[in-house]
Length: 204
Image (tube, rainbow, N blue to C red; front, side, top):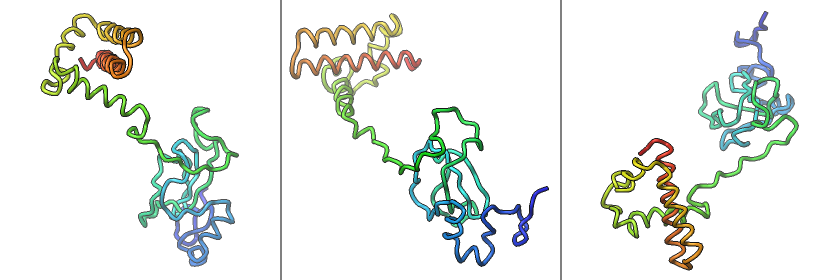
């Protein structure tokens, strides 16, 4: 038999009914007393793969991964008002995919943008070369990339055409080039490697 809250008529709440005046007046203290971290809303406090248990404005609890929850406050009954690290027994998750109980909560780290990665300008330079550098003789920016001659040869010879060309350019770069010439050959190898991936994905 389910216990019923005598105030709101719903299922009995673990931390008390939010409709009770005493609860509304001392919500933060009540949450702390029951082992919760009060949550005023805002940026998710832990990484997406942390298992957490949250208590909602309506008094209900939910145990799931932090990345699946809405941490902003909207004024709705489903707003999160408190949280704590979850209990592993409450949810069936593959080991290694969550942080287990007992570890202190850690603030979420800002995810690095691809544009901030050291390799980003290198890959962009390879694309620019395919469009405006040596690649111009094959159509460059004038002809859509997937309509250029390399597609015909890739379809005819398979991905080995692209990987072979990439290997050839890398060998030439390592043995006969330096400085800008070295970079030009390596950029070409990167583009051919990308062509091989497009073939593997069935996009050509």
